[in-house]
Length: 500
Image (tube, rainbow, N blue to C red; front, side, top):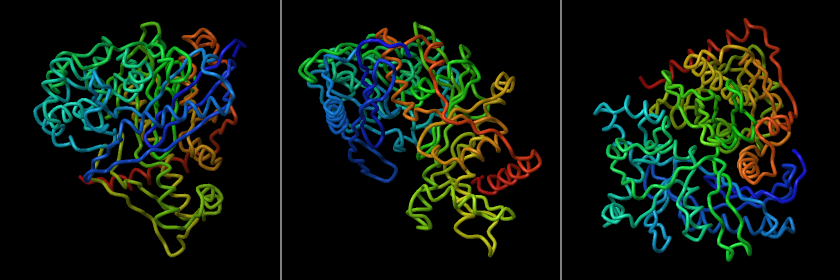
């Protein structure tokens, strides 16, 4: 990136921790700070966060990051925010205090309500407008639950006394001293309430989900003037210039700006997004259609598939089976596994995600013999990530035939991509190149880029894309007959695992 004056601070507010990363004018990370906060489990299937813990950890990491870098807030050209998506907060406009804990994206308390809406025949309407399924994963039923279970909340919401939104909008409210209630199009597109074709809240969906419009934030571009921080917080007034949900921020950070480009983030789970340009492709294969980013009033869409268990399978090997001491053990073990042992792990520990969406399925191991040992189980856990990614890619190509034209290149990030063995098998299984970037903090980089672009210190999309640097490309080397046999074995194991 071209040299310029000023720094960009990225806030990366995640499910288990809050981070702040400082980027210089060339887009290089120069300092960071991270702080975990408690997870709250009030009942089976319920997951909550204390909004004050989210806020205090965010503010603390900002201050710690700046102190570590020796940079004053006055030197910041802007702030970018990326956040755990779908997690929902409802707060009092007068006090700024939440009226209930944040209900986290993983929470399943509204599953029965979602099932009732599905039985009543609303699936087609909701998917056509939002690109999403009806599921407790999304924000709409979380808002309604809070309004219906906190005494007096619904009446106050109808009167405009309450504000609600995703975590980014809550942080923006706090950062600006309660002056701005806004969100960006990517976060809004994860609520079940936004018409992704018009970019505005849908009155029909607000009525269906019983969410008052008066409490919702203004929807803006992903790079925009979102407001100015209260000078008392950081010692200077700093503009907030970029916001995007975490997976969309990673799409931006990976510079996947051309239709057909795809990124996949491998952490505890996996989220794969395929840029479909200006076309909102409504899935016929139970993928999600989402806004990838919105710039200068123009929406760019993406198809999204989620895998519930990726790195979590490696954690299971370490903590559950205790057959490894560190995640880094899995690569060497997988390499040492016997070639003739075809062991499959279907990691449906919490059900199967896209494209199966079978919450009742449970994990299973297939192909065990007397020769099966630690190495074969490690290899099966890593291979499962590639098999599931191919499931998503095939569903995406079926939904959007344009994805089949030209060479698919998958850009990857997240903790698992440190394993060369995993990425080589991924390339082999997909029959497509897999690119690992130099900068792995792509989510924070995406948020920083959006803010820096708005501030005028980072280049346009083409300039940012040209600055994207590859650490290594993994190219397919597996014979087609072996690839076909292995994937057919996986599909058979999934068929045996599905609950119905």
